[in-house]
Image (cartoon, rainbow, N blue to C red; front, side):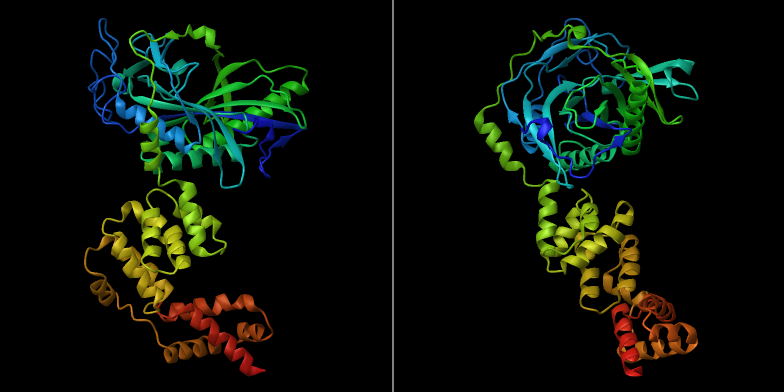
Length: 490
């Protein structure tokens, strides 16, 4: 792994009053296993509170943990995808009291994590180091009942232990992040990687992926690491960006007053758009770590690691490379980032493999398909390609293709039947020429300006023709006719 001071942020730096940000993120992701980490209770979200529990995950006396093999395999897959060293590891007890921790300790990994010394390359070109990605069990969930949802203003609190014992991988980054936007990019790329690997659903809104941000600042040009504060449980990318920006500026203002930040844990108040103090920051010795006596050391064999490495065939980076290669250098970066989404990529990759023009496949996926894919009951990969082939062969116009995609998503009839029912027959050349002449005559002032060379009016005329033709005209043909008429007028 590169030294954190050697990592370039490539244009994403945050600066405020002569200071720069130093941020490290801790991402906790729940793993997609059938059962919990140390017992056979179902690992399911949204079940009736306190029903997916047993004596083991409730920490009752006399119970013993049994390690879930699937958790180990998924954790190794994460480590390999993050370019980590997979090694022998041990489990420790992390001792602390909180009502959602039924045993009074959490089984985690301490000085010997299963994955260490990796990195994640981001689309912007920057690289963020990964210090470790270790296995641990999740806690229960506390709900503070009151208008604010905060403990200090609640009437009472409820605890659901269904989540207790759910397997987690905690991914700890190096302090390489230099802006809130880079933090967002890192979490987005990490989330897409985890979902692509099939190890997590990545749903921040359900708590299956949670982010803690360690924030400090230092004078620009300095390489020191100053006092940091940890912002706990950021459950959206918007909150992540705003919380880091606020906390960085708070630190700068403290230094400007001749004060220093206190190392502590803070929470982000979305309503007030600020962080607030929770508790003083614990150090490792506060948790009284000691080896878990009921679990042996974990030593994955080389053959197992190689087997899992061979299963990693789909990552955001590989998807991005596939689409860029297909586009042969054509710049569609924004559309590519949308098209590599877990739900969208199967459509665009299949379309390209079936011979659809890559530019068309990426554009329709990133725009029209992205807007409806979650409600697209009847839009299979095969039907998506059928629609694109009609557009690609110019049997229907681009606007008609967009209309057809919306209809196909909700209608299980054949594409041919839907095309007939919508009367999607593209206007021929002569019909299009007649429409262009009609619009020209109806808009004499705009036509004069177009003849004078104001090309921005092409969109005006194309829009008029498309409206008159009910979307049947070919926009590219309309443009060609307009330019030909102007040339003939000279």
